[in-house]
Length: 236
Image (cartoon, rainbow, N blue to C red; front, side, top):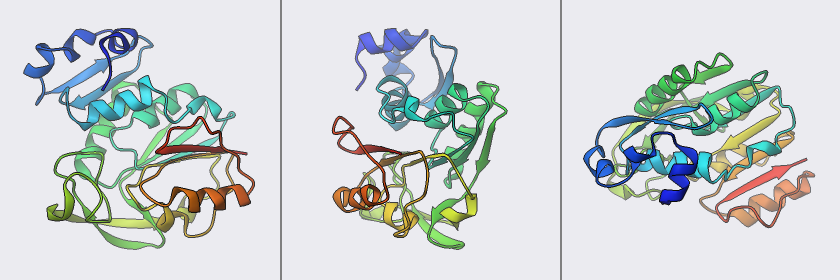
């Protein structure tokens, strides 16, 4: 949870995210206005949108600055667009492809792109898997950032409802220079034992981190021990 000091450091309208105002606005959509000019609409001040925003925009867990002048950036599991918008603003000459299969997330993603007047982002409403087709996406009823192909992952658990979403393989996007993957357990399905040739790959892990990390190292990537436990950034 972001501290008061962090909120004041990053947000111009930080007062809206502190009690008692925060508690009053919890179920209302609100736009976080950053001191660097970025804007991000979130669904409530205490929900997963705010947590996703703070980890990316306050804590810099994806270490976006490690990308080296990329031309194409792929955001798999874009959610409401925190990583997408940070990357698109930092690299205005790059094309950012934001992939998000869940309709309410992709709607807010598009809104956030418009709020920031970005013209270098393409939104694709699908999931990335190992083939072209369809898949069942289980909707986490507690966290809008935790929808998954797998029932047992996420706070919603095995009783979560599901929707059917279109899928494409990673090869669908062609050559990309950098990518972020936040796919709630589908990392192996997406990579399919074929580590991509990028200068930067950031992955949020749900399982088998050591096994996948070995594949990246064998493919010539390096990572730092200082990376977050649940997020690893690989660079070439």
